[in-house]
Image (cartoon, rainbow, N blue to C red; front, side, top):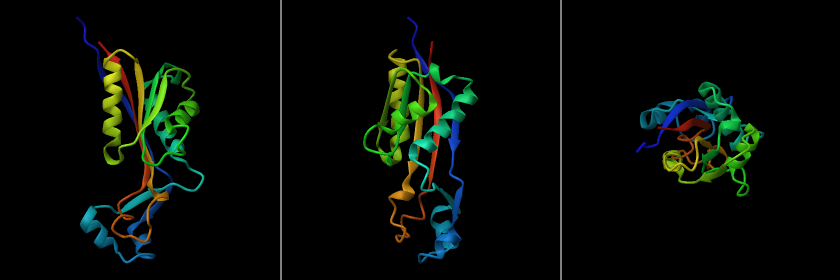
Length: 173
């Protein structure tokens, strides 16, 4: 009996253009480049501008993954977006990404598990592919944490930025 497995065909990523350095943060909160680097190793983070939504970042990462895989959006039948910062509560960010990419069949939904969200989304997609329910999935992790951070709390604001990553996952024998 043949057993389906899922493989990663490609990866994609997208970061907003705006970069905020540790020195930039030191101008508005009690911190320094040395303090942040010593505790986290972080030197800079990318921050989405007001016009960039979580779905925009996710779609850009997904487009790159599709191109790298040589896969047309019409060949995707599952879109899962891991995000704790969705565009809206409804519709799901995955549905918006699905529409933006021109994916016209299958299912699209979000998972929200914060730091472990992408791993959880990959696990769900893998299970659905191996079970035969779908053939090819886009799994996206996308966040715009800059919108929900307390920019006066140096214990958290120095740790987060915005961005997205995506993979094309495919069922194979």
